[in-house]
Length: 462
Image (cartoon, rainbow, N blue to C red; front, side, top):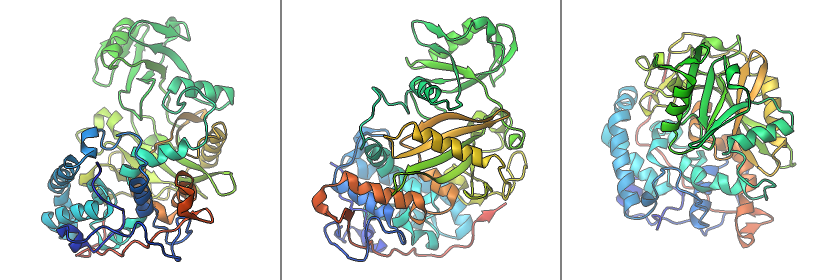
C-alpha cells in the first residue's frame, strides 16, 4: 500500500526523525477552505485528497507500479534523494552554501512529511527559505499525473469513444470538424500498411513523424526533404521513402506513426530556435461561471530536438512565462535539475532577447486555445500546445494530464498563487464524498508552517 502521508507539514526536523505522527486529515478549521481565493494551500490539499480518497488512476510518475507500494516506495525516495543531491546539489551548494547532506535531509523530510517528491525540491527551488515556506501551495507531478487531473477531466461523460487527447488522429478529426487550424496528417504508418491521405509523390517538403498515441515529443523524428524520394535526418543520414518507412517502423515499438508537414516558426520568434518548432503551452480551465479561461501560458523551445545544441546545453527544454494581458515574456529557464539556479534574460544558445519581448500574436494564440477547449466541453482543465507559423497559430495537441512541475518552475511561483490553483480548488470537491463538504466546499486543517534551515542568496540570472 502507499506510505502514510497526508500532505500536511509537521516540523521538518521531527518529520525527518519519524517521531511526529502524521495527522490533521480529519481536523477542520473554519479559516481555510479548499476554494480559498487567497493563501491557497492547494498543493497540500490536493495531496491530502489524493491520499485519503484513493484518487490514484495510473502509474505515470514514476512509471513503475512497484514503487507505489511499501517498502519499495520509501527505498525509491531515499535513493532518488541521494542521486539528485549528488547530480544537482553541487550547483545549489555553490549558489546557496547549503550542504549536500542538508539537501538530502530536506528532500526526505518533504516526502515523508508532505508527500512532495524529491525532483520538486530542485524544480521549485525549495532549498531557498522563501520558497520552502510556500511548499503547501505547490502542486507536484505525483498527485496530478497519477490521478487528480485525469479524475477531474473524466468527471463529465465524454461523447467520444476514445481519449481524443492521446489519440492524435482522432484529435485532428475533431479540430477539422470545428474548423480549428491544425496539423494535417499526411499518412499513418503501422506494422502492416501505410494509409496515405495524399499521393506519396507529393511528399516534397520537410516532414515530422510522431506516434499516434503518446505524450509530448517522445518517439518523434524530423526529416528534411533533399530531393524527390530522398530525406535526411538530423544526424545526416539519408533515406529513400521506403527506407524511411522501415526506419520508423523499427522505432515505433509496435505503435502507429503519424506523418505530418514539418512546420516552420514565425519570423517574430524564429531566432529562439534553429531546427525545432517553438510551441506555446496554454492552460485553459472551466471557471466558476462555466466559462473557459486562460490561466497560464509559456513559450517552449525543445532543446532535445536541436541536434546542434547538445554540446552547449544539458537542458532538454527551455521555456519563458507569458504575461497574459500583454503577451510579454519573462525570464527563460531550463528543465534540468542541475540548472535549477539559472534563469536567462537572453537565450543561452542563440543569444536572442527573451525577457520583455512581446509576442504580438499572443491574443490570437489565446483565442485559439479557448476555441479549441470549447470543442471539448467535457474537459475541465487542458494544456494546449500551439505553434506560431508564418500562416498564424496552428493547434498541435491537447493534454488533460499536463505537467504542473515545469509550468510552476517557469512561472516562478506556485499554482496556489494563481488562477490554476483557485480553479483546481473549485473543481476538486466534485471528486469527493458529499459528507466531507460544507456548502459544497471541503474544509480541512491549516497546513503547518514550514521553514528551511538556511536562507539562500538570490538565484543566478544571466
